[in-house]
Structure formats: structure tokens, C-alpha cells
Length: 365
Ligand code: ADP
Ligand code: MG
Image (tube, rainbow, N blue to C red):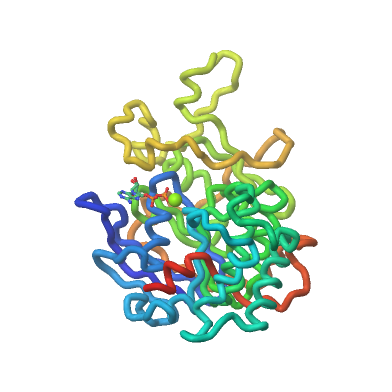
């Protein structure tokens, strides 16, 4: 379990995260969502102790992360960070083996069991055939899978992933998240931009907006037009496809201004109860936070090809403003989720829990 209580942090005088509280229950998959610059990566850095909070507490299984020694932290927490590791001339197999480093004694080398674990992790992400390639020569998507394999090889029971589906094609995005969700004994916090992937593979979601928790709870509580529109400032429709919630997104008000409005049906969908900011939209960029201003990478459109009658959000849940304080506690998920299996990633291997990348980072602390 990962518990975050009233965490505050700023890179300088400016507050980046304020009063962040939520819990990731044992074995659950919590999706961390929110616009660019809302503080998702910063929060993960606090969790894996690359940064220290200015206030509040962060615990892993009731132990404050600040009191864990580096190696102890690395055996309990694996990280796949957004930043790529530096290019070093090592192979993929050696890269994945680094995940075993926290488990290796001071004067020991890797054991045969370590190599078997690492090889199984590589197979688990469908990358066995990359084993002998220099890591530096891989494509973005291949690198991402190898870093996830390294995290799996680490066999920590807590896992942090920052936009792990970046660079992956659609099939691998689903396979990866299906794999992550299938790690029943691993408590996972995953940053995702694609809200439809978040809907399908997360037990709970935490929506950050400008450094605060705008909403937290079950997928169907958080992924409502009423909650998302004021935060992302884009029209949202909710429907169901392939057995899961699917969101469809319209152009933002900005986009409308640059279009010939005559050939499109009205797009105005911000509900009357939305925050003033949502209604005034982005008339002036000077008032925007960094995250708000950098919305070049928005949520992706739904994959449902049918444009017909998307149902509008049926949620009666509170708006973001109502749910902002105090941040909701996240409750245990129903255990009956059915991850869509994928051939390659669901192989046999006895892979236990996850782990992560910043082995070096965590292990050296
Ligand atoms: P997200 O991951 O949600 O896109 P980040 O956590 O990366 O957001 O950033 C949150 C805010 O903190 C942004 O305003 C960003 O510009 C700022 N920020 C991120 N990293 C640094 C840093 N190293 N120094 C100063 N400001 C930073
Ligand atoms: Mg980020």
C-alpha cells in the first residue's frame, strides 16, 4: 500500500503540489491523470524519493519512504520514469539484469536465478528477441518495453510508471497495461494520458489539476464530463465500447475559433455548473499555469469508430470543485476486473511483481 497524506512540494517559491492525499490499496492499479504540467511526474518523483516533500508524509506499507535505506526502497519499489536512462554501451539483457541489482549482495555477482528472472521479464514484455541488442540502438517503443522488463525483474511489490505507454503502438499499449493490471500482488501507480486506457485498466483514478487533487475515486466517478471538462477544457462525451467506459473528445474552444463554425454543429458542451475558468476558456494565455499552457499533448480520442449518438455523461457525481477538498480516499477495488489478455504478454513465466527502472536511482540512495 502507498499512502500519501497532505503532501506539498514546490521546485522554488512556486507551489507545484499542494495538499495531495490519497492511498493506493494493496494490489490495486491507480491511474494518475491530469493535464500537462499538473504535477504527475513531480508526485512520482516524491514517491520514489528523487525529491523530498516540503510537507506531508508518504509511506509504503506504513513505512515512511524517507526512513528506508536506498537498497530497501529499491526492493520494495520499482520505477519506470519518464526520463530515459543515459545511453551506455550495454545490451538489453544486461539492462534488464540491472533490475536485480538491489537483491545482489555487496560482493556477489548476479546468480543464475537472477539471470533467469531477468530473461523471464524480458519474455513477459515480448522482447526476448532483443536480448543481445545494444540498448542504445532500440526504438522508443522497444526501449520502453525493456525498461518495463527491468522493472519486472526487480520484483518489488510496488510499482510506479510514468507514461509507460508513450512510444508504444496501440496493441502494445493494451498488452502492457493488461500485464500491469494482472500483477495482482503489486500496488501500482501509473501516469496515463490516454483516459480510455485509464478507464479500462485502472481500479481507481486520481485526477490532478494544477497541483491539486481535483477528483479521486472509481473510474466511473472520475471520468465524467462534469469532472473532466473544467480540468482539460475540452468537450467530453462518455459512452461504452468493448465493455468499458470510452470517452470521446471534441475540439477545444480555441480550435473552434480557428474553424469555420458554419459547417460544424454547435460544440458548446461545458455544463452550466462548470467552473468560471472552464467557461472563460483560454482567452488569455497569460493567466495559464505551465501545465495549462502546454496542452499540446492532449488526451487521445476514443477508438470507437461510430460517431453515432455517443451518450453524454450520465454521472451525477460532484464537479471537480466540489471534490477537490478534502481529497477523497480511494477504497479497495472490486476484484473482478477482467484484463483483456494478450498473447505475448501473458505467457507462463513465474514473474512475480514488478519493479522498475530507477534501480540505480533508488539503489544508490
Ligand atoms: P506533469 O508530469 O503532470 O506534466 P510535472 O510534474 O512534470 O507535470 O510538472 C509540474 C510543474 O512543475 C510544471 O509547472 C513544470 O513546469 C514544473 N517543473 C517540473 N520539473 C521542474 C523542475 N525540475 N524545475 C522547475 N520546475 C519544474
Ligand atoms: Mg509528466
